[in-house]
Length: 173
Image: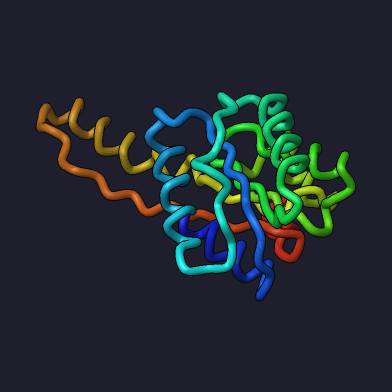
C-alpha cells in the first residue's frame, strides 16, 4: 500500500484532491494491510482519502459500481486505489466517465485485463504480486521437512512487486 501511495504522489505531483479506496473485504488481512499502508503513505500530502474505503468482494462489477459512485460524488477525485481483485472494473468506470486523463486507477495483479487497461490508458498502474516468488521457498522448505522428518524453519521469501505503468509495460507484458 505504501508503494502505491508513493507512486500516486509522484504521478499527481503538486495536485490536491481526493482518492477513493476499493477493497475486497475489510476482514481480508492482505487487502487490509494494503489499504492501511496506502492511507499511511498519503499522510501529510494534499491527497485526502474519502472515508475508509468500500468493499467490492473481488468483483470487477462491484468495483465498477464503487468507482462510479466515487466519480459521481467527488468532484476533486484524482485517483481510485483498488487493493484486490477486479481493479480493471474501476478502469472501465473511469473510461466510461471520460476521466482517464484526470483520475489515476492503481490496482494489483498483472492480469490480462489490467495490462489491457494500462495499454488503453484507463488504468494508470498495476502492482505485480510475484506468485512464484512468494511460494517457491515455502514449498521447498515444506518438501524438505517431509523428506527429512525435521520441522520446517521460518521462511523469509523476498518477492518482486513490480509497479507497472505505460512507461514500463513492455518489460512486463
